[in-house]
Image (tube, rainbow, N blue to C red; front, side):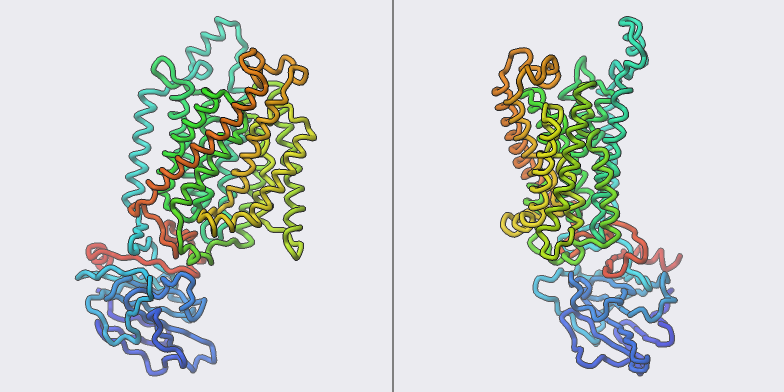
Length: 613
């Protein structure tokens, strides 16, 4: 059995189920009355003028104040808390560092009516659950409690839900793969060797050799580029890079099934090869674009559900554009970027948080978090030519796509630096602009990169993309949040949304201008229906515009429906006051504990086991 007391350094505070005995040398700090944060500030006047503050609170912990405005000292750390009316929290400044890491447990049963504070919840404050007999508090000296807070309407502990959902999703994909998925003719050992013998093919003609380098680059973009780009939030880097990893790993499995059903399903089977893997990564990339709008505001359970539903809608949209309308969109300006951006923005709109300003202190970056995000930008920037050219026809098509993307990225980067300095009165550069708007050049030529843009046309397109994206970050993002209630964490509207729409329009323009004199025999690779006489260039252009409208419509309607599904409170969404915070879902290093205190409620059985361990 634990002793009902805590010895802190040279001073003793004794607590015994209903009484609190501060040692005589500790006095209530002058000018600090009982606050509505339910804490009282005590200090020892003999400590050489150095403030050593202690706090005792009952009822709703005062650290739930989202901005920490009630905390006396920014160095205070929680020894523990039980967020119930019969509980208490003991706080100290960093006066006793030798207690760090010590695990202490103190059973509570009755309220202490003469605490130096009274429970007086602020208007709109989160309400605590009523204490049940035998409830225990878990106290950790020097660090906050591990575990996720369970606040009214916001159960963020996903110990059962996450494993269950992951198991169900993985089991479903395993079974569907077992029944429907098999190797294609370039992957099957029997079929490929039969094809080599029957058609006298060179083994190097296998589709793997020209496609795999591009696949590697696209794969690196999805997991390294997008992953590191999401680490800019100072208290959400774990969630940014690892939730990116989680949802991409699921999305690529599910997309093989969805895309395979629409594009490579025959003889009762989905046939997969290296191109299936590239397309699956494209689909995962679109989901990660949507993730950017929701970063820090949703649980991993919500993100997995969004990925599953988003992949399904992506596959349907892609099938309509590429197979029914037969538009050209090699780099995905319409299918990947436009759809992913506006789908994510609509989900964010439905999940609008009116009190997100309570987490404003976390919605920022540090020097090092921005540096890590810049690494993600460089990965994306370097590999984007491969992204746009990965599934284009071998030869001149692929080379032209790489070149156009290369020039567009370079000009968008230079433009971004110029505009970033111009819109800042002091002339300083904004790292947010550089991390994102510099990439817009790759987005804007996604549809048109395999077309005859010409090198100077690619440079102009990149300049336009950099200009629009940078101005969007500076002026449009705040308007979206204030007027349209669209909270866009990563600014995907500026990097993917507007450049994607412009890319679709550019593709339509170039389709209308396409002539046999420009393309010659290459017209069959770029615009096969125009080459065969089934469409005129103008008609192909109109279909390109229609494809853009379909992508926008699918994204807006689909995002609204998926947002309504994700709005269920049982999915572990964080409360407004704890958005952009890793600690509610992750075990984090001790240095991350500053500025946040977790709440953990232990059951009687769990506490008894720990007590008698």
